[in-house]
Length: 561
Image (cartoon, rainbow, N blue to C red; front, side, top):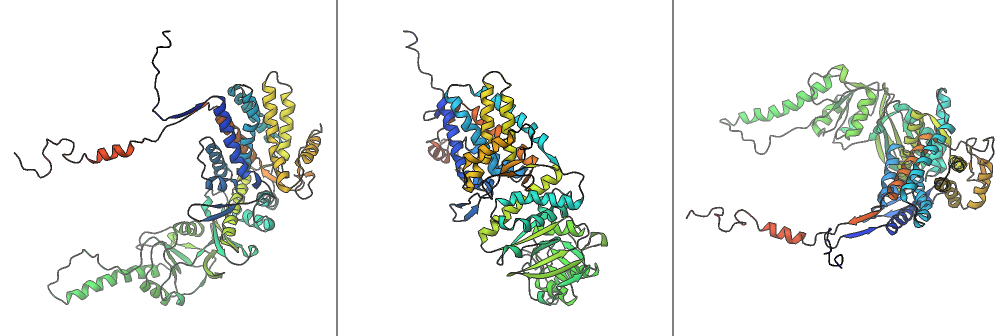
């Protein structure tokens, strides 16, 4: 009786939404599966594209997992984890964003029946982590190194990796053309880690084949004044002066006050302004530079002055373009024109202004330090060029990773099937329930080849059975076999040059397992209500001006009593 009389303890604010227990976990798993279903059809060479139309009216057509996940305005707290792993995969490796989302969702889908049967989530998490470590070790043991090869061999191998990435993109039809371009661009920047050293410029018009790689820097002609057309448009081995100052005639500030006792003195003030700008321009000419670039404006007077002396100038150059010119030409950006010595001037073999489509481009090629490259992209529609840029970004990241980590594995679902077989075999040697959990992890890995078949319109069950049979050979000869997208059968992915850097797979398995374990470890969601009285509180606070809180006090400007 005494227990019935105890008062109810109210811990959380009224209106707080709490959901916990098994139903809550299953609900989170369903949300993650729903997110994966959005990007599921974009996987692989025959993957479909998504057209996303946002609130601002801008349209994006993409099949890049990370781009789609960013553009989806997901509000479910558990499903947001999948968005985060797609972003981290994109920034860390560049490719495999759809893979990582699919794997995480599939791990959760496989865990769902166990959760519903009352298995404790921690048991699943422990087994999943064990399976993850086993899978990563297996990837490392299956990886093939591309170290110690000659530059030509290395280029060919890297080109294969880039082609595998571009296969599934909108520009997959021209994958050989773009793969060669990407490999040359990445090798041009060498060991430099800064991605912004590879510029991608977009010019609508023409077709994809009109795209080209500049072994140096290219940027669009900036805003120019009269006199610009009289400047020379081509130089051989010019000296390049890079500035971060305005070369404009500056009038005195509006609030400056000058008192004159004699009207004739006024002219001397005007002359002083002109002398300042002429002195700056003289110093630029004396430096011996033939190309002058500035981040700030170069006015009409300066443009004409340089034109008369056969010097090319461009003002308002974008910061990143100026930095790339500095890195490529060996110059240094100056904030003054005093004491400009030869050491701070850059140089290149050829500078020229070229017409590309509707735009004019300033192109610096044959740069001495050569740590930069620019890809000029052509294409019909703006959305198409945008997607081509995203595709090239993925390919560039992959080639960089392959250069650094220099191990590759077979793509096309081959590596996933091999890990799946290995884990099933390993599970048999384990006592207890974890045998079932590791088996379910192994089954989840088959989602990659299954989805590749579904997206290409093949019978997934048939293809997977063939793959399982091939991978079951004790000799291990079936390890590189994956889905053959062209025939609907199976083929040796390694022999067909469907390769991907091992780091992509390792990162994807790691991130997907971590995300799945994170969702499984959540057993309660607490949603705090929006404070309904927030506006009321703000209104109440608004009244407390100076002297408002204490009416008896003396307000501002009140007379002393």
